[in-house]
Amino acid sequence: AKRIVVKIGTSSLMYPNGNINLAGIDELAFVLSDLRNQGKEIILVSSGAIGVGMNKLHMQKRPSAIPEQQAVAAVGQAALMDIYNQRFLTYSQQTAQLLLTRDIVEFPTSRQNVMNTLEQLVQMNIIPIINENDTVAVEELDHQTKFGDNDQLSAIVAELVEADLLIMLSDIDGFYSDNPLTNPDATLYPHISTITTELLEKATGKGSRYGTGGMTSKLKAAQRVLATNSAMVLANGKHPKVIFAILDGQAVGTLFK
Ligand code: ADP
Image 1 (cartoon, rainbow, N blue to C red):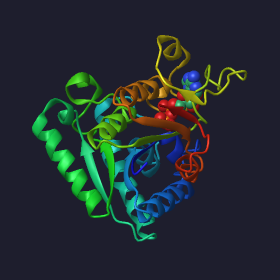
Image 2 (image 1 turned 90 degrees about the horizontal axis):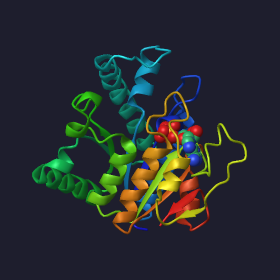
Image 3 (image 1 turned 30 degrees about the horizontal axis):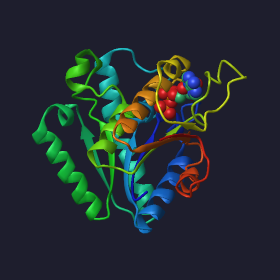
């Protein structure tokens, strides 16, 4: 795989106690910078704006009102980029921020502009860091502006840049026969080639208080990736060095191919 999109979920960026997982972010920056130097083309899709915003504003509970969520996300997005810039710079790696909305699906010109920007950044050896534009895209306007979540966004980006692989990092080792949080007998699927309704029934919602999409949205992302004959690996983002093992061809997490 030469062109790789990596998606990291909030659960990998935040500790359950509300602290920011700086060690994890640093390891991610280390791994992605190293891959970039090996000639891989890397695009990062990162959640975490609301989690980091809550941390900055000392909020214990995710706000329920949409404008409040948007405000917290706006604070958190800048703070998160601050952290990314700082960590990546210790590995001499430049980054860039792209905040996208569904425009890139709906309008060919917007789509083309985003594609051009991404291609240019990759050519300039810069790692684009993408998130949904939470200020513009609110849940109320669902299908008009919102992607659904960053799982969908990462699959759309992977399609847009014709990525060879989408690596989705979550707080779980892969896709299981049932939610391992509630069923200790659940077993890991190492390889899935089609998303059946039966599989979709085995997926439930988010795991942590920060999680958003849950497993259903990860399967839907996989479905999109499979439709373009590309591949996706769902793995645990606790130790981002797992990305090396994945690219090494080791059996890690769940491979959708
Ligand atoms: P993220 O923040 O990484 O996007 P989510 O909380 O949205 O993570 O989704 C991951 C969670 O999905 C897991 O922690 C797990 O509890 C839950 N889950 C539900 N069904 C399954 C399943 N069949 N296999 C694995 N995890 C599942």
